[in-house]
Image (tube, one colour):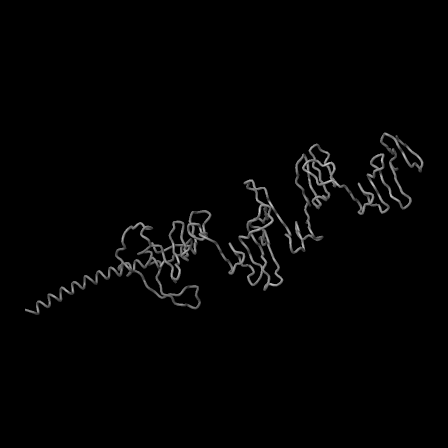
Length: 414
């Protein structure tokens, strides 16, 4: 049925066909529906009179309801969307007309008691972009201060939770944070890639943390902290590894053999070389060790006050004995000195590295700047060798003296 024009007062049109209203003027309206009284305007969705579109006297528009409480309200008892195109959900949708277009759903799910915003297309979940051209996004705040500002006042729930439950042996990171710093030679970068802060109102009683890192249940609902940073209780900034209550600035705790040399201990290693140093212990004998990649180093044994150096013959290849020790010692200048950087000129006894390198180069090290240093403990064997040489000379002299005294006694007896 079609009308080109007509007079007001048409109250009902019943026909098996659709109603088609056409306007062919450039200034008039194709269809104008007005309610001059205080009643409502609605459009039925079928001949039985079921309301499809409803507009009340306050100009609130409702779909599926005759009592819209908001400017625009959609009501339906259907559930949440699925990965496929949904046709009956309690939701609004914005659809791309293309064959493989993406649909944006917005709605509510009474079964799970949630509201949602989801992009779906071609029977698959699609990416969702907020503020694609820039601008801040706020959750729990009307004045977001950053690209994503999550603001919450709850005291018993996570403010933000990031969970990856796809445990399939893949290599994807759960969270990736990147900062594009200025190029070298331009403005200096003074910011940080990540700031984690906590505000302890009462540091004397606050037992919270600035950060905790650890393992959790498969669904991410519980946590077993492995590394923590304290926030209060006079320990602000204390770091604990293997403990949730560090008692020093850095506290390392382990059970069993975790800190023993066979298990690695604490390792310092250059990324461009195989050289490394490992601090291990205490073991069951309460011994602390510092060893290099070759397994040699020093150890501090329980109840002792001095470092012990590894010296087992099974660790050594004997090259040769130390010879001419007295001559070498005589070439070393023993001096009292003070450091150039010491304004107080505090005196110290010592040797000159340039002298030592001539007679015992194995005891001298050179840094990248060409400065020499002496490992005094490696000169002790030279001192022992010199003492042994002096002892041998003393023994020979004593034997000679004894022989001379015997000859002198024999002459005097004649």
